Length: 403
Picture 1 (cartoon, rainbow, N blue to C red):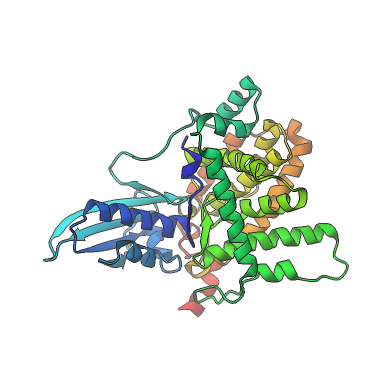
Picture 2 (cartoon, rainbow, N blue to C red):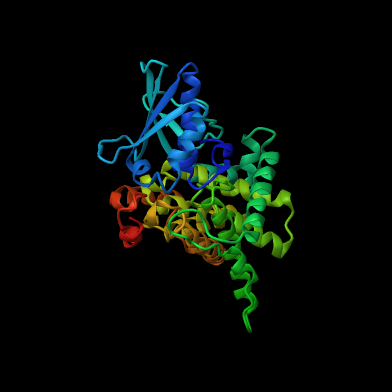
């Protein structure tokens, strides 16, 4: 399994697979052809379908600057190795083709060059699934987060503290921001409204839930506006885990070191999903993004409460199991509707999953590995119209208005 450094990435939104991934691919391709005078990028599949709303073309053009890059949206080609495909071509000053490469944006900002062995991927965990991780912990009587500190490099705690600092900064910026998000939908920012709302006779638990949602909205709105966030595991699902951690740290006063441990445990759940399924909405629907984020956040909650690994696993399983079949149907191709609200609802669900697992772990029948497998199989069966193409579901309602 890969390093947590490949899961938690700091970058600009609004999409890890549609913005960060193609941008990284463009940088890699430009480095292969330093003498090229200009470039051309052809987007296929989901990248073509929702690339405008996700700022895919803009991110690619910026990556090649100051050299020019023509971006083509191919909506016709269907036979593709993955839903997120981009072809790059390099030309000299006379228009002669110097070379071309096909890149695949596999989700979470990670990329792969078609036909080439994967390079630079940091495989640090000798496990194939979560059961093997649990067995390792049982043999050594250690908590889940200790696995990270046993196998990663000596700087992993500092890295996780940096991730936490970045998450907090995104929330704080989002809570202060006002106005309308970029794009044709004209979606109003709501994080500050949620935080500052005054409700008559509001119960303490309702206020706590409202604030939790405000924190999720804050990060998600920062992401939608192209702000700096952390993939957890993706840009579109980046509001769930930070909101849960921020809310609980305010309530219980957890140290940054304790939060780093929660991020470590959550990260192991995330890399397990990446190893055995997908975190790409274009490949497996929003269940792969929000579902995984909810499972990661549920595991983090259990870690903060010092629950044993069986409860961590069950909590993550509950969180993911009840997102099965969740479609990815962003209205207009923007990571705004239903994405932002979905992050808030998932944050609430993560805490509820941990609460259920605390009591019911001894009754469980399904392993987390089984739920992950079911998620991936379900994702493959979801019609392509509901996998980040904006051709079905909620996205169809606004098509006429936006056009």
